[in-house]
Amino acid sequence: MEKIINPIIGEEIIFHTTSKQSSGEKTLMEVTLSPKGGNPLHYHKRFSEKFTVINGELNVQIGKSLNKLKEGDTITANINERHRFFNTSGKITKFYCELVPASEGFENVLRIGFGLARDGFAAKNGLPKSIRHMAISMNMGEGYFIGLFSIFEKIFRMLAKTEKSKKIETELIKKYCIH
Image (cartoon, rainbow, N blue to C red; front, side):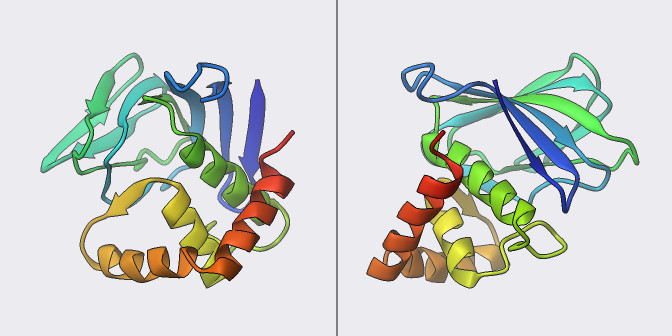
């Protein structure tokens, strides 16, 4: 098992099953989400995301439906379904997140993002300080954002496809993803 920690936002991920281990079938992660942690509304074109609460409470919005999950509860955001998760409980929440099929790109975005945070290259919100690192992450992670974020996303995806970005992406993968 591989464990990564983002010291800035106090979150932890344990990879129980990776894309390589499952031959692309699934990615299974155990996520420790800090109080007030979460992500913005987004969707994935290539994989579904299933959330199962281990302990604590997790809010999961799918479409316009807001669901408060407690220990043992499970919900799935299917391919192309708008969703987000967040923690408003004031306590740490632990949950499994399963991607079907697996996404090595998503796994690597987490490794790179947490590595950049560990090495001092992330802002107080845990996101990369570098616009180029942000662009590479957005492109690699296979997530698509809704609303205001979607405008920036298009610009970031174009930036991520430049030769310079591709070279930096290779360096980031080599530094943070290859064991």
